[in-house]
Length: 366
Picture 1 (cartoon, one colour):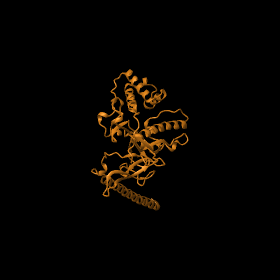
Picture 2 (cartoon, helix red, strand yellow):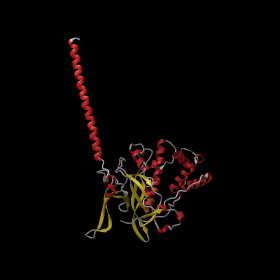
Picture 3 (cartoon, one colour):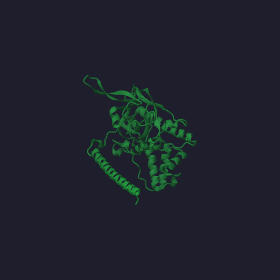
Picture 4 (tube, helix red, strand yellow):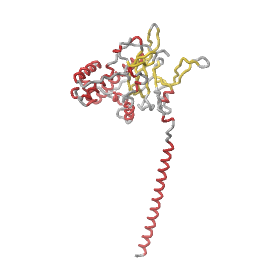
């Protein structure tokens, strides 16, 4: 072998040995790094940590008569996981006075944030509820024969507050238990808003207006218009928070009110689908809505579903669209027995059995 070839081979094997050693060192480093990360992960996870506590308390907000708005205590903001420095975004500091007195005999105030022009995703709406002294007793059913005048009525709503860019301000949803004039007006405007959203999007697509399900509606930002009105009851006049309208989406501006096509929609959908029984908390089991145990009598199911459809005020087209969206079928005759029973249960859960026309009453003045 010529001398220059020997030199080349010598350098080649020397370089190969160096590279092999470097590879071994890198492998050791990677393995060590993995072990360190695993150890750090095991150290970071504390099985007994208070972080794993499942809190029973639900973050709550309520209406304020004057100035009219939605108020949430700072304590509840923390419970809902409000993002840092976002506590007052879209709102202002506001203390709600209690009947408790401090050492100076002055009423103690609870600090919180007041939203005069809230922007919210409504991801849950309960049946009509009744109670005394603002404590929920159960679900209102006219068939129970109770005296309307002996109770107050309300609904629970599960909401997520968003900023002007429609980004959530917190992690966990907040429950608003609405009573009196506020509940009636808020619910009326919410239902009108949902229909407006359907019409605006249909107009944008150049299609006929079609009813949508609750998940679809949870993707729209509801901006209620709240104001203070004087209301009289029993000869006494007091302030009430009233929802007099809402910002209206159109075919031109619908994207300013909808998150349905944005990445955040996936997270909202997960939250929406995880809270199916949220409104039942604290209600006695014997007062919850009872779904009929349907025998496989299709004639009976047909008559019952027709009664419920008429009670909802649906036309033929709306009923068909509901079937298509939920079951992929155009007519009730095409439903399986299991689907038919489920269809009737869905209709029952949409307030067909609840008496919403229970009159008005006043919010307790602040």
